[in-house]
Image 1 (cartoon, rainbow, N blue to C red):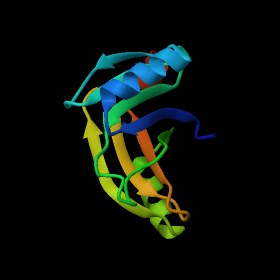
Image 2: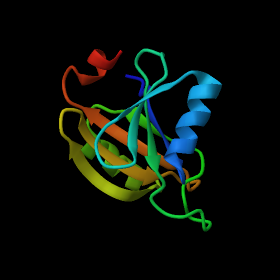
Image 3: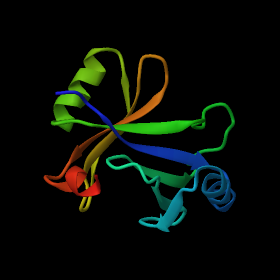
Image 4: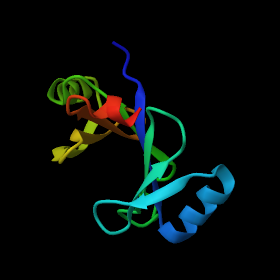
Length: 128
């Protein structure tokens, strides 16, 4: 089974400024959801969801630049083991998001931030 891109996250210093930018440039819409500074993005593309969130750490050289993509996986524990086995590093252990599934964050061998999500049954299909 391929592991399709299912979600991306944009980290921003100023989420209001970023919302204006992406709504004006791409026509995306935003809905507040979850913790403060977190917005769901509706891109109009079925099957791919997005988030805009406050940057977790400053851009001092270690902060996330770019989009953090999430790949749908069948088994997040098996994926975590494969990440470690093949040279990646877990940056945030797997945790459950109520009503969505279980996600983990990792860095690939090149230092890129990536996530893997084991969706609850029917969740991905409902978002498509």
